[in-house]
Image (cartoon, rainbow, N blue to C red):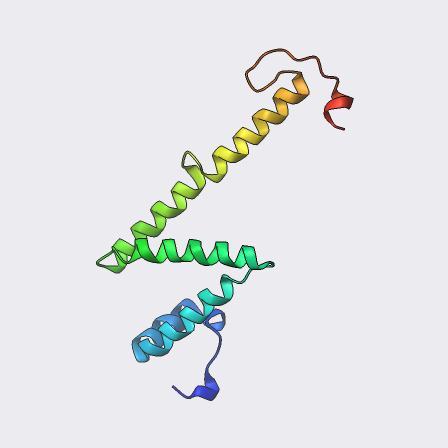
Amino acid sequence: MNPESRMPFSFYTPEGLRELHRKDPNLFTELAEEAIRQACIGRTPEQTVKRQQMQWIIEGQLRKAKTPLGRMHIMENIFYSQVYGDEGQLARLMTGCTEFIRSVRGKDLSGQDKAVRLEDALQ
């Protein structure tokens, strides 16, 4: 492929990516790796490191797959565990909401009554 016609990974359509992978798998891989590097750049150095670590974990798990379908199943499991798992985003959201409701109702985390006025809880 002509280097002057090289577009960023995000400019390709799914069909274009499929065609690029078929015609030039090395360029496809190079563009994909660059897109991942760019996606890992955070607003702070700490955020960048955290994103890179998460990407390394994902790549390590994906290496276990023998087929593209296997990779898809691993990605699906990662997604569902991050959203619905015991430590997932949904569990964190529910915990935060439960703590807020208990504090507004005047109960501490153990469920015991705690006399708190709403104005005091919001300060």
